[in-house]
Image 1: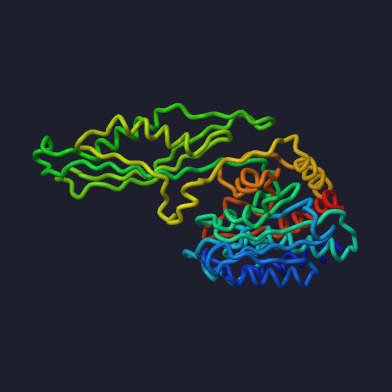
Image 2: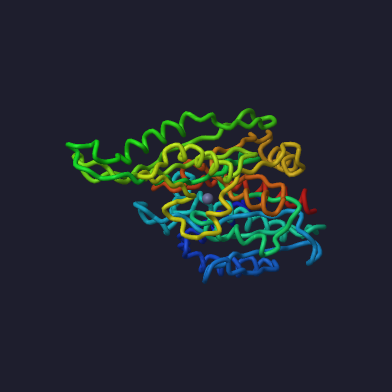
Length: 389
Ligand SMILES: [Zn+2]
């Protein structure tokens, strides 16, 4: 039965890749998944999380109105094809499936479908429902997961199905994208004393920000994790022989558990206040080039952590051990994950666990290991039976 189930997961991920779902264009995939889960006998629902863009939920087992014991979370959207060759024609080469979305993260969704199907076909009765939610817009403004609260989503535990190479993620950093704008006064470069050089002021601000102490957080069984600043982009000046009257700094500030976006904003305000004068304007705001939607700028993307003593961590360790004959590596990621919304908005103890190598996400060489996909399907199946059976 193992191999038949694995074949289903491979077939499934091929189908998912072939339905293009670049951010903003998730509709066709949402409708396909709704039909697919229906055909398995699941109860399904759609929710319009942004105009014409739908989250999809599927449930089976237990009593219909009961709170699910376990919720799988996956995102429907992918980044654009960029320079990828044949991004939407899945191709199998040397044990990998190539295609846009293969690893990020249609593999995780395919494993969920195949695991659901295997559990249903096994005839096992589930005491509690198991659920899947597919969300839109993970790669941009997170409108899909922002809607989870409004949708009334709840569960005892959740698994984010993003790729981890079958390692067990218990938490993630948050991210605060910050733009600092400095406005000075233009002048000819031969008489710089007549102007106010915005680039030079911006450089002082950068130095002050980068010399601040970084928040640290001690995570049980993992160690110390540290906040970080990255100055990703600078825009400013008009010509080498002009005094620059404007400079923008784009920072990516990563937050550790316990930190909030407001604390970071206060820290930045304190620094830039030292540079404000009657003739120098300095402003800071939460901003990202692809963010136009106010609610996400207000809420921010927060760090999340599930205690390593949580039962879901224990369940996952056991299911992984059964399939792999050894326990999983447990980690905390420097990256950001939507487990933020599950943990911080819904209060669900959540972990991250999925097939594939996350370093291939968004690359032109995006591919998914078939072996990972098969083993992940087995682990999910065992987890469903352990948590909900
Ligand atoms: Zn992803």
